[in-house]
Length: 263
Image 1 (spheres, rainbow, N blue to C red):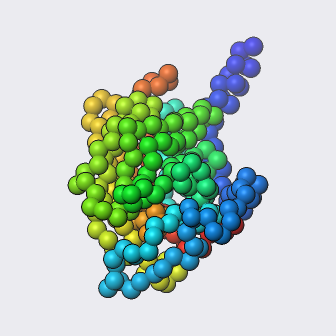
Image 2 (cartoon, rainbow, N blue to C red):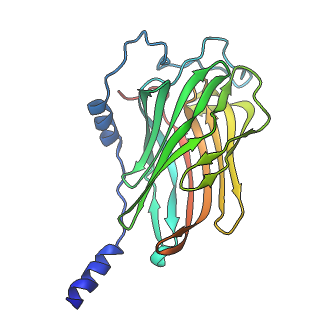
Image 3 (spheres, one colour):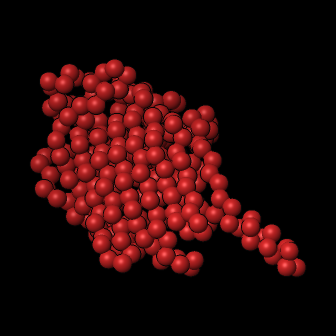
């Protein structure tokens, strides 16, 4: 019995990660999605307008959301914890973001690993394109799932049609109290497939400095449909768990490889 217990303990503390390939993301999308008709007023064309760096003003055309499909991103980065001697999941060089019709608009789901995903929803309102007050993120280390569901007191405008508040303060719950702040910053451009794409720079920040700290800064560069064109993500946190205090780190960048999704 003792040797069996030792073997079980060794198995329990093994950790591994598995990349979600483009083919796997596309197969999942195709098996779960009924494509809407081309006349849907929720979706954007798969060919957003692009402009030169000297012209970065937002289009006066009616707002539309990202076209459904699977988008490819050049990716660098990792997530890690310090528990049990430490474990690190390196993200693959290419990851995917899947857009599907849901609720009042579209869901966006980033799946770098089978053990890691992030999901949020965008909708169009009279203020512009808004990040909705619900979402989720998923991590798995050592076979232990952490599937956090988020609810906030209100949404945040990301691609505005009217002047947004200087700071958008949200009050959220996601495995505890969470107080994200959003800033809508400058209009600029990012290059995709050799073309300058106009983007809206938006910053998400969480600064919780108590014992169980959470420090997050995310620089989002969104096209006129709310699709991430470039992302710089940095997170450090300390959480109380049944295994003791666990420090979590996550740092990554995403760069959109094509404006046209796979469908």
